[in-house]
Image (tube, rainbow, N blue to C red; front, side, top):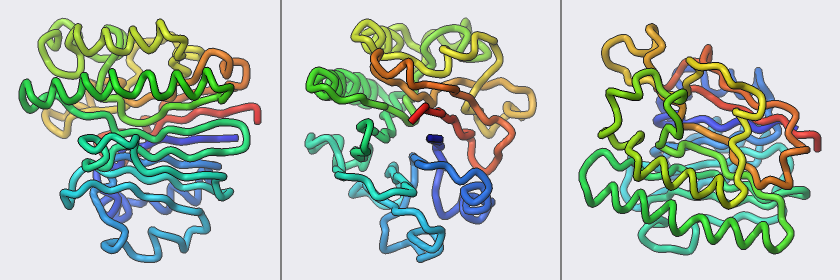
Length: 254
């Protein structure tokens, strides 16, 4: 089974740049997108259903902002929009889908760069999500958490770590939150298969950053430790254009 996650930075813009061609070419079993920046009523049937996937959308109150969507070949057993926490759900950040062998959280984690208020909002999100997914594992479920985590965990995960120690996305207080996930048994699947540097999933549009590969790895597939043996491969597909992020993937033995 192949899963792909991609922050498309606007589904309507991405569609004009070949998103549907990519979907048909890759034919993943499940595709999670973040920053859809659209409500369903703003979308055409071309995006909603003509591709043959079951699509689910969670959009924020504010138009043109945030939003997540999950495309599934097989209809999920259950779908939940949001975490049940209003301050996050109002921004359209989480879609939970239940599948035969796992629960899948498609998440657009908050960005903390704007100011201290948004940084606290981001840190609170990390804190509030962790017990929710831990409880799912304790109840006997395998769980996948994917999406744009908006934090580079280790120095290897960005091109210029020393220059960004005070930049939201690589601040020690943010990285510590991912440490807490790891301490609770959550596993970064990409690092199960790849230890090499220079592998990134996001590049600023400025300064020719992508061409020079001055990037950050902030898009992940995390799984609970009991699920590691089902992971066959994980990768980053930096050759795929259409957004300031590129797709990341996870292949499972399911």
